[in-house]
Length: 131
Image 1 (cartoon, helix red, strand yellow):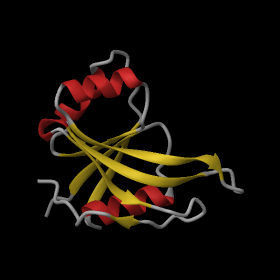
Image 2: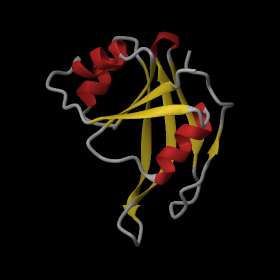
Image 3: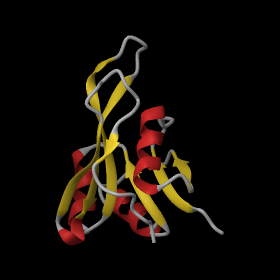
């Protein structure tokens, strides 16, 4: 059976909390594909999401014009929200995960971690199949 894909659009590795959140939200049987693509035009993120419809895309909450273009195009994707203050080990704790479904005009917090020092949180929705 072919694994469902999660596309992680970033030059950085996923943190343990980000991986845990993905598994909590999509199940353990997914393939996480890191893609360090660099976008040059505002519509590039939207085009990337449309061309990777075989899975679910998580984008680093980057420049607003990329996110805005993806919203206007009606894309479905996810973003991570980190706590603003670094932990003692120099990393940032994951605060929340949001799923955006522009076709349904939904912006939904789907995972939350109330403790900035922890890598564990809890899903606010049942695991979502990617098909």
